[in-house]
Image 1: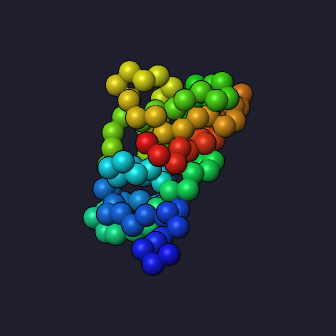
Image 2: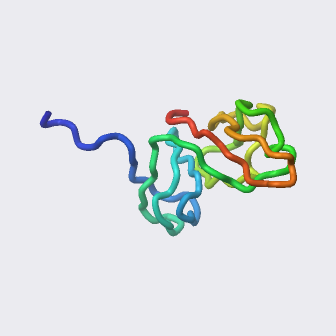
Length: 117
């Protein structure tokens, strides 16, 4: 096929802020994990194929029910565990589901990331 230019598993973006490799990033309607470190305002690559990613979150988030939908508040942002909630409220962008619950003392939060927002 002459017009296919990509497998669609990655996207080149302009970083809205400094991004570390593995950080989840939303740019416009794209959600993905940074393949490498990206300086603020620089171009970089996101893996947009989905998967399960570990973020350091809050005890309440880590101990929540498996399958609970997790949300963040804004687009054009780098997502860390403190930017994720379980209720829609003002956080209206669903980014995935909780993959694994812990006892709340392990703050690693396993998020099954959506492939599309």
